Length: 338
Length: 277
Image 1 (cartoon, rainbow over the protein chains, first blue to last red):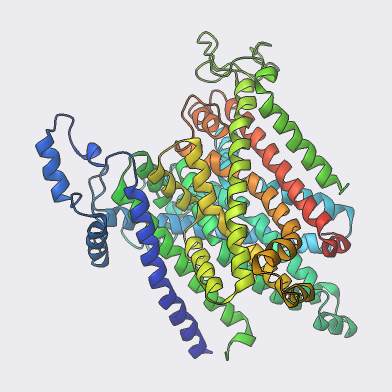
Image 2 (cartoon, rainbow over the protein chains, first blue to last red; image 1 turned 180 degrees about the vertical axis):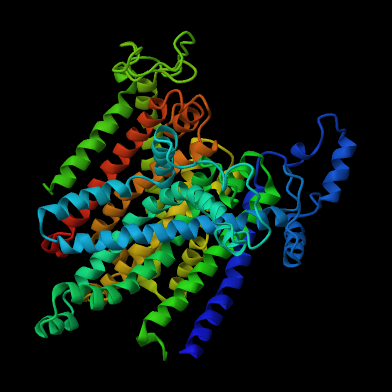
């Protein structure tokens, strides 16, 4: 089993390298089509033509676009993604500071989505053919029509502003020290044994993570329901029924396990959807992650930063897909020897 | 075809199309007109509201109801045109990949995988930065992002159809490849394409709103739902209606397309009709 896991991981990684290269090329060339001149943002208003030329040369913007890409690639491979034009800081440092926040938010969002959709899928399956199912079905179609950024606005207005139950800005209350560590506050505060701060960080995560989860869970609920429906016609279920197991045992012990596979595949394939949702959700909750950073970079026409963030989104999505593939092999005994 | 989903979804879609087409006749006010004496008015059913502005006014004193009605124009135009583009591009590539197989299939499938390794929102935002703002570019970026959805789903259906006996018969009769694709295969996958198209209109409307929200879509003076949401966000503590109403407009429209698409999926696919999913 261990061998096949390494096989899957190696095959995935070998495929990922050309993907990242090609996408970085697409992003690079698309951004060079930009009608606005990025130099205009870099220079003070009283700069002369000669000043502009100096900066243009220093940034390599006078060379051909292919040479520019190769220079960018060489630097990127040595861990240098250039400097952000608006923040005047290395892109790498900005990314290192904000990526953990986004990953933490996405994982908590995914956990919430599972907490909503596993019981949801079971409930839809359990009520199949009844009136309750059609009501639940309408609710799921309604949920499908609300993207996560609209959930974010609703949750912020309802639970943040009107009811005042939960905080809705940033990662922790102002004044709380963010520790040096992994950047994942839920881990760092446990390591530092600061339970109060941990609660504070978690309460800041609830609303934005819930917005991501509510946008994502209708997809999961539907796949889970249809795979449960398919499983219910399988041989092993009939056999289990004939053995006299009760329906609850059959669902929880046998069918749920088998339905996990298509559900995990969907989560892997659609993780980008949840991950991309962080762009607006983080902006709405002033949450300092790479989604928020991307929106700011776009508003500032900050090309090096946009390029760097797009690259990070691409690599992270591929990494998640690899993990999902490995998980798939772990959970599916049929694939282990292949 | 008479399922409640098709009827309700279809009714919502028709109502929205009427709003968009007859916006100048339906809207009570000019959506661009700024009544600076009546800024951030609440809707007429709240205290302080006025019957002149049934849904109240925004921070510049513009009529919210009129902006919502005119906003349907941008939403539906972008949604429909982008869906047509994504359908044409995605279906063409899917037909080629699914019918010919071999290296054509591998090349197209690799392209789809490559495209899907960036979150769709990130890809469309990046494309918009490169292209610049404007309705035409919004449509272009939605087409360039969402064709993969069609390509993936339609391709696997084409592969199934291409193995059927009637396709083999057509080949034996000496029909050309193009004729087989257009006359034999395309009609068999058309129900699927209609369903995907309907759902895509809703997705396009959401993407347009997201791009408006980031400030990458239409110019600020064109009424659009995403723009209204983004502007009203700054005042949502004093005037929550300004943000809730355009959200409802968007939700109802997208729901209409989703209901219609889901209803059509069941109505056009006899296998699903029996199972009643």
